[in-house]
Length: 151
Image (cartoon, rainbow, N blue to C red):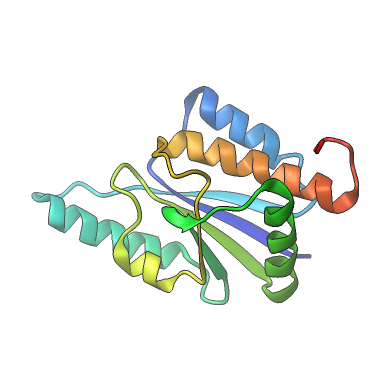
C-alpha cells in the first residue's frame, strides 16, 4: 500500500481544514496530514531556521518530496493524475510540502524532487491544503475512470 503524507506549515482549523479532510478521507491511498508549526523565536531569521529544522525532521527519509511552490510546474488535472501515478509507482511514501505564511524554507525546496504550482497566484496555506486534497481526489477518480472529472 502506497502512502501519501501532506506536510503542512502552520496550524489547521476552520472550514478550510474541514474541506481538506473531506477530500482526504475519500482517497484510496493511506494519507496523513502532518502539521509543522513554526516555533517562537526572538528574530524572524531564527524562527525560519527552527521551522526549517522541524520541517526537515518531518519528512520521511525514503519519501519522494513534492514541494508546493508558486514557481513550480503547473499541470492540468489529467497531467497531474498521470504524474501522481508515476510518483506513487516509484516511491513507497509520497510527501507533499506546503509552507506557512513565509513559504517553504530554501533547504526544503532544494530537497524536493519536484516543485508543483497549483497556480501562479499566492494562496493562504489553509486554502492550499484544501486545493491539494481536492486535486488528489480528482486524480484518483481520473485514474480509476470515475466520472467525477469531466473534460
